[in-house]
Length: 116
Length: 112
Image (cartoon, rainbow over all chains, first blue to last red; front, side, top):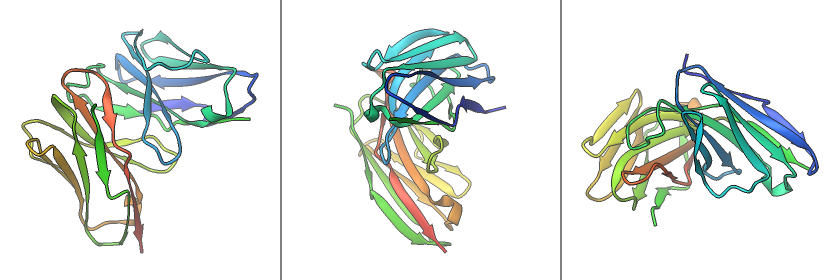
């Protein structure tokens, strides 16, 4: 099973709402990633978890709060977002966070987030 | 600053034709280069991964080449199909960090 699942597929939220995105993999991968992708742009790395610990935070605003409850699950908690945060949020996983090795990175289908 | 430049930005070809996409990078030190295919609204799917010592790698109708001296890579698509319509993204990782550098992608449209 080489699948990364993400829920929900689509999410519309107001600027005062609190919502969460969920990502799950059962490949035994120990690194999980959150990316943000705007239309016609490449993905931008947001967070990297390695062995359930946050190892990279690419200066992401605090209104985005990641959580890794266990090695298979990754959440992204959203609070007080702005309309410019509307984007496709992609989750990915790999065997290890060491990109210098040729570990395959598997992406989920993404959650399309719209902030109104 | 590490950068990855892709060309062309967009490309339209007829079904059955071949095409080549380009990727130039300034990432140093070099560790590996990946090509991804991304359908609209979907997550990227890996096509090839190449390290410094690899010049060519194929995955079905997709063939990637790497010239580490000139810091250039290409992705050649043979006998294109309508399903090849997608964005193709080049990603380069340096040996000194764990942060990948993404290119802006080439949007390929295959017409029947």
